[in-house]
Structure formats: structure tokens, C-alpha cells
Amino acid sequence: MEARIVDVAIIGSGSAGLYALARVRPSGKSWVLINGGEIGTTCARVGCMPSKALIQVAEDLHRHAILSRYGLEGGKDRIDIPEVMDYVRHMRDSFVGRVVANSTEKMDAEHFIPQHAHFLDPNLLELSDGRRIRARKVIIATGSTPIIPRPWQAFGDDILTTDSLFEQENLPKSMAVIGLGVIGLEIGQALSRLGIDLTGIDQLKTIGGVDDPEVARMVVEILGKEFPIWLGEAAEITREANGKLRVSAGARTVVVDKVLASLGRRPNLERLNLKALGVELDSRGIPPFNPTTMQVGQLPVFIAGDANGVRALLHEAGDEGRIAGHNAVSGTLTAFRRKTPLSINFCDPNVCQVGARWSNLDLERCAIGEVRFTPVGRAMIMGKNKGILRLYAEKKSGRLLGAEMVCPKGENLAHLLAWCIQKEMRVGELLRMPFYHPVIEEALQAALYDLYEKVEAKNEGPIAELAAIS
Image (cartoon, rainbow, N blue to C red; front, side):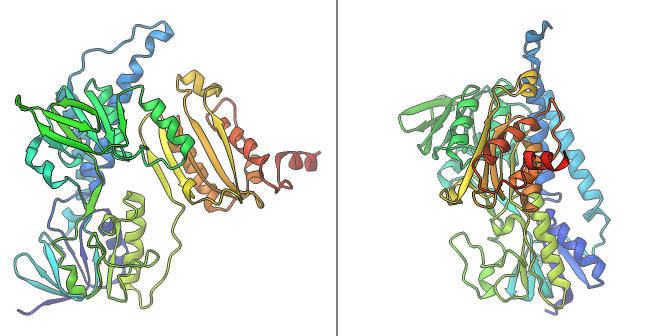
């Protein structure tokens, strides 16, 4: 069969694929966008956006219960779960609609091909209808799929994932969330606040992807007051005679209506026949690639976004798509410096990690500053004075390296810190910046003062600056 020839073929029309296309299309090169699954990005369909809509409803309801502290009539009113889920789907459909309307919906059949594809060799693709495409460069951006262990698949629709949760017209009275990483923790807290009898389970001894032991302890302490959290034992599921599910972890057991499996996502690579690339695949079936160029080995193939299994976050998928797209249409490869790592868990309070992780620090050469939020004025007024912020810096230079936190408005503090780390700012420089009163950022100021006392570089501190002005 004669193959159609193009300069660039992009497999996958999710975030990474669309960002790659944004670099390929203006180049004047010929291209096709191939997508055999659902249209719309993972973020808009089943990830960031519907989950945040559900979280916001749950947070507003939870906040309503605090009104009695102010002398107002509060408490939880009747919750119409079907209305909640309908609202979440409405928001989801709005976000998906906007993505599709601005991308694949505008493409003709010559450029957008709704088919699955697999490799015959590094430059030759075969579509599910038998057509072939020979591409000078190929970008793999096929996204990911929730993991459901094979034994659990026998329980059918009673095992939910984020791909199916938002399609539920109603929610059961009781659930277990197995896997308390970022998504499991967010959704678990939201479901609990909506009145679901919820149990959270994880075989690890930390939750929310937390690395710093002090922050880890605080996260479990705070979230464990909202719903039971079982850690350190793998979960097993059996079917009860009444049709419900018994979930056991070590000596602990609970009977629930449904289970939300939040065990991570696997890259969608199984259909691609990556063996045809002639490179060794790892245990997950992922080919070797350069994270600064996104190139697979020395091949004319690039891999971006969730498909490479490294940084499964929308902003990272966007960056990787841009890098892959740029290199696919350029005469020479360019290696790009990656941005400061930034992770935000939208549970309440937020759990965030920025820059260097605690487990990777050389503790003899690093200093750690912290602040606890119990006495922070702004947090007290908000009724959210729970949490801790920990900052890491080079002891000798005072250069900020990273941070981890569980605290109110962590999503904002994390961004500020990520920008400062990327600019390679020192603790003293940060303390010379303005801090208003009363704001949450005063907690950051307090943590910086604590850190400043532990670093050796003192010549750029706030006192030195004030002395210079006088």
C-alpha cells in the first residue's frame, strides 16, 4: 500500500499533542494529527477541571458549616448529590467544548485523523483502517489511562476511576479510596465533605506525594480528622454476599458500596508497537528519551506528556509538547532547560512541593527554615490556621533550593517560591522584598527569617539593606 508522506505526524490530540502542533503548524511543514481515543484533553475531560469543580462544591459546603462561629445560622443543608454531579459534568463539558472548538473541530479530514496508529518502523505508521503514513518526524503524545489491578477488574462498575467517577449520576453512601496520592487525596476529601462515608487507604506511609517527614506527619494529622486514613498496608478487595465490597488492609477492614481506585496512570503505549522502533523499552514499555529534547534515542521520534511517564502535569505536558514540536521541525536539536518542579495538591489545606525534594538534600550542606500556621493572623481570621511550611537553602550561599508545605493558600505560596528558585534568589534577597500585613505571605516571611538565621550568607539580609538606606 502506498503511504502518504508528511513532515510531522503527531499521535495524540491531548495537551502535549496540541502544544506540539502549535509549534509545528507555523513552520510551514506538512503535518497530521492522529487521535484514536476520546477528543479533548485529560485535564479537561477527567482530570484537573472536573476534579476542581467537585472540590470547590465540597469546599463551599464545608465552609458553610463554619458560619455558626460568626453568629450566623450555618450547618450543612440538604445535599442534592445528583445536582452536584450534574453541575460537575456541565463544567467539564464546557471546558472540553472550549478545547475541542479551538483545536480539532477546526481541522479538516486531511489534517485530523480519528484513528489509532502503530509503528511499522520509526518513520512509518499504519492506521487502524489500514492506511499508512510515512513521516519524517513522529511525536508520541498519547496520554495515559488509570491503573486498575487485574484482580479488581472482576468487580466491574463497582471499581471507579477518575475516568468514570464524573459520569456517576449519583454517589453511593460509602466508598473507599485506594491510593492517596495527589488525586486520591483531593477526591477523597471532597467526597467525604459531600457526606460520603469514606475510608482512605494507601500502602505507603505518607500521602499526597509528600516527602518531608515533618510535612508528612502534619498532612496525615490534619486530613485524618476528616476521614479515616489507613497507611502502610496494601489493600485487598472481596465481594460480600449482599453485593457490597469488603476492603481490607492488614488487620483493618471496611464494607463499602464502591471503591475509587487511585493508583496512578499508565502511559497509553500498548497500541503503538514500539518494538518496531528498535530500542530497548523499560519495564513499563517506555522507550529511552532525552528530557531536554524529548527525542527517543537517536531516532526521528519524540515523546511528550503523560506518554513518557515522568511529569504527569498539564504545564509539564505543555512544555514537553513545545520542545518536541520545536525539535521536530528544526534542522538541529535544541536542548531546553526544564522549569523548576512544581506540584500542587488542591486538598484543603493545599499540599505543595517546589524545587528540590527533601529526600534529595545533602542535609550537612543545607539549612531548613519553617513556620507553623497556628499563630498566623490571616490564617486565624480565615479559620484555617493549620499547617506547616518548610524551606530549604544552601547553607553557605543562602540560595533557595526548595520547599514543601501543607497550608492555606499553598497554591499561591508555591508559585512565588518556584519563581524565586528559578531566579536562583538567596534568602536575604527575598527578605528585602515587601510583605504586606495581614496576609498569608507573612508566614513565608517568618519561615525566611528562620532560615536566614541558619545560612552563612548575611550580607544581603534585611538589616544590611536598612542600614544602607539610613
